[in-house]
Image: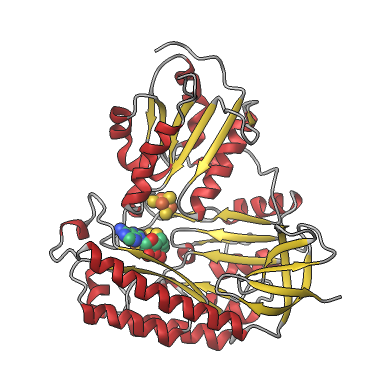
Length: 440
Ligand code: SAH
Ligand code: SF4
Ligand code: F3S
């Protein structure tokens, strides 16, 4: 392959979870340090990074069509790097199937992109899916830019091995980033304009470390210390595992004013038999007990979850148990998915795969139930006056969009600016957003 001149412009496209969004931002910063600038809208980038997700079949297949679409009208292609979880899981396959891809880089190796780029420019195709001992966090550049809301990865990887899930294989074993590094990165984000920080991890509540005085701390300790930073207005965290919801973390919801009243706690199924087959290591009752304790600590807490319908062997009656669970919790919002068999996971070879049309019907019913729950939650918020963090302009003149403490999308018109915390009365509810009135 011929040599390529150094790229002047890049574009990073991230798919999948918020952690991938965080990684995408870090890759952009890294490329910026190499003197490469982001391509403007509509401009062809010299270097394109596809930061991929492997969680479900559709997400993974998308990569190949995205690669195909990068071909320009004149037949040329940019330098293409495939990053993220598909790169980790199917690196060799991508190299074999997609000859235009020059670089394949896993989620724990992307700090090596600059060296890979040198190789790629010399005409070589390079793959790096190592999970090196030196972590990317030690060598990534300092944060310099941020919007009002920022992500901060504090924990990565997963040791839980739910039988349907690829994450333990694509992200590796659980690691917690060091306390001091996190306080430092949070400070940089605040200097760059962040008002709200969402702490991220595949099992964020499994984070543990030692505080500045050498005392062992869990996520609640980190949250309390972050709350002491004067410029930080709001703290959120996601995603948690029910078994790692410690008493301390639950208590923090009642005690730390900057910790927003929102808990995303995936449960996946309302059937104990299915949970066991999923290797979720919690029961419906133990999950509900955690939600009860969270509500006791913070009565207005908004609850969210993830659900999978059509796990192998899921019967009609077991699916009905999921619907009952949803009815009984009163979720504020949720994500729900059809089970997708992932190569290499134990569930993929289990008996009793559910027919696609049955899955479709179950997902339709579940989403209808969740939609009602979400609308009911939003309606119950009407009349409240709360702070909204303004994130961006709306479509209408003078309109602004932001989030309530309960993570509802709120739109309103009036005097405001991105990054403002304004007081808004919630006046009209839809299933996915709320209309508010600015309160002077
Ligand atoms: N660590 C988090 C989230 C992991 S991925 C947790 O354990 O809750 C996000 C969601 O994707 C999961 O909660 C699950 O609902 C869904 N998911 C994961 N693997 C899946 C699969 N094979 N098929 C369908 N949905 C899946
Ligand atoms: Fe996947 Fe389960 Fe780990 Fe979540 S806890 S990332 S669903 S293996
Ligand atoms: Fe997808 Fe990897 Fe996140 S598989 S959901 S990008 S951890």
